[in-house]
Image (cartoon, rainbow, N blue to C red):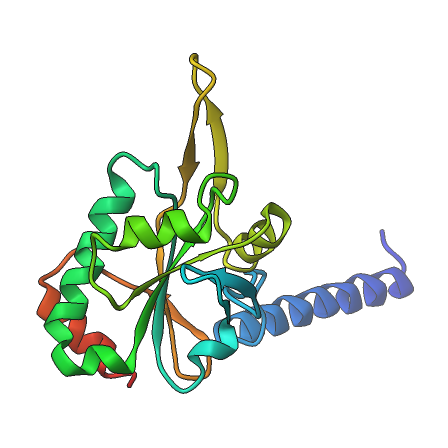
Length: 194
């Protein structure tokens, strides 16, 4: 039989555990506690004209940011085409926003290469590159997965995540932008943040 002191200890321990669980659930449910790393952050890169571009470049306007590379065989050009269609659907409002295409392959994607590549898409799309260390830091800020995959011929491709990040006027992440709908619907959502 347990002593009265042991019973008090067990009851007190159970109450402390229950209180800790309650507080944890409450903080999680109210959004005050999250283990997820925030998306985005300050960055400084070089645009496709060889000029500095940073998160401050877009202050005061919403923008979309997409990570990919110019040698991508299918996903990147398709995504950039779809983003171009959204810009066209915005009409004059496209001048109040931007799309930033950040390379995950800075070794091959110089500013000049990106400028030439992006000439195939809407002129509101801007390329961004930098030295590998800087690009990796930006990928980390946006939780981007990028991995070099060597080919037999000595060439390589890149495996990468393909989220499109919607950033608001203050440069804060809003959500992963959905392109799986008509361009005018995507454009209407983007217009809400202008």
